[in-house]
Length: 640
Image 1 (cartoon, helix red, strand yellow):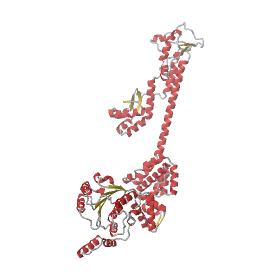
Image 2 (cartoon, helix red, strand yellow; image 1 turned 90 degrees about the vertical axis):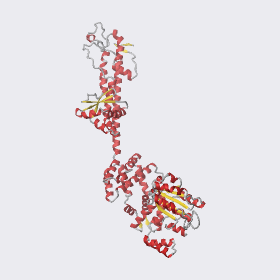
Image 3 (tube, rainbow, N blue to C red; image 1 turned 180 degrees about the horizontal axis):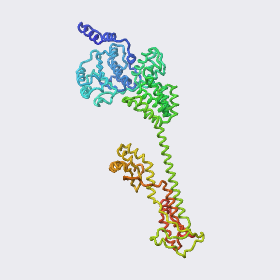
Image 4 (cartoon, rainbow, N blue to C red; image 1 turned 60 degrees about the vertical axis):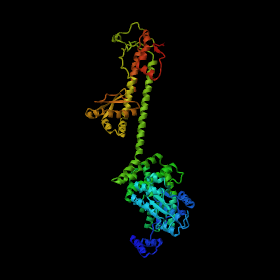
């Protein structure tokens, strides 16, 4: 084909014949196929035909009508939004036979040549294949020549961000001070790659994506002009797949019409594009929200057997869940989710049956899944695993929360009972009257005095019957407050030990977590936790003595317990620890009240109050209950 055109021009030059560009274009088109793609056939030829970019149309047409045309423009935006089409319309407005106008006629020779791409004064350059400094130098040489037939030469550089830094630098001077009859129009899909020195010399216009309504309007006009019987749902599906690009929408429609030129159905679009059925997406989303893994995997298997692409399934499912989330959050806003009314009703019902947290969790699991599947060795398996994980964490989180709540309630109940028993015991020890035979106080300084018999002159209490029972043996002293706190800290740390290991693993302290896994807390002394290791794990115990391992473990334990703690390690078996501290403390307090009930005669009452204050149970009551001793009852009389 290119040889034919070259031959025509060569003969014309040899014979000095005058061929117009229109004749050459018709000759070239005759050598081509007669069919034009829809996106080329229905490309806007005037500013009035442009849809969706009204802000740019208004600015450019005013600039043309008023003669305030800049020497350089930058059109930036996604693909298929009309950047190159706008550049050609600008060239028409500059060179139309009617003069510089915002309403070019489109019928004069200049407008037709520009529309067909054969105008010698409108030069379109592909920035991807002409990106070097040599091409830009050649362009700098050509801009000096005057236009051949038009009033202005227009250089349209598509994908200008592909130029090298050297090429951009070479373009700076001619771009800043071009000849009076030269206009530059740059088009790019990645404006952030344009150097600031270029941006500052251009008027930048941002092209927007087309919404679903605008795309549907164009598709309906095209199918009406092509005499195609199209279902509205099929057109909506095509518009949704275009993702805001009119060229993509017309290309998809063209591909579907190649299968059936007379009718366009949903089945045709699904079959040609390989997309997922909307009813299948709805059912799959419902199964995931209900955590019905069996139904989810069965439906995924059916879709894959139908030939659905794995990445397409992940993409469509993520978009469907996103629509559910928007309908859940703002069901009253109609433009957020572009679907037909009957499908919208079903999606709103499904969204109301779920929670925002469920939809966020599911959407977070699906986000980025399409990119991960690109490098997966077995995409189908990866998709199934991702869907299982997306449905499973909700149950695990609820179960974990329930177990933690039950454990917390049990611990609080145990502590409340222990405190209640302690209060009751200490109050009984203070208020209970003395009775029984007097004995020497348990805090006597010598053993001789404790073994001496009671004085014979000691009067027997009148309110109690005499007893011949021997003096009971002194019980052991109860656990102190510090010991009780240490045992409670140890009990809590043993319950939280799995969390300690988990936090170390999350903080990437993998070696420390591996060493500590073979040990367990066995005792607490003050603010020091003793971690015991079996003798066969001497290697792990020795490594845990390293300062870096100690620091990491102490930091985690301190955060869990809420207080600054230190650790030390030891080989062997930990000592037995009482499981119910409050029971032991209560029993000890009851036993210690015996010496109060068996107090000596009135001559010894002077030291009783001091001895009562020294009693561990009374001291604990005074300390924790913020109390004071009002009086001591002995043989029915009050000693204040």
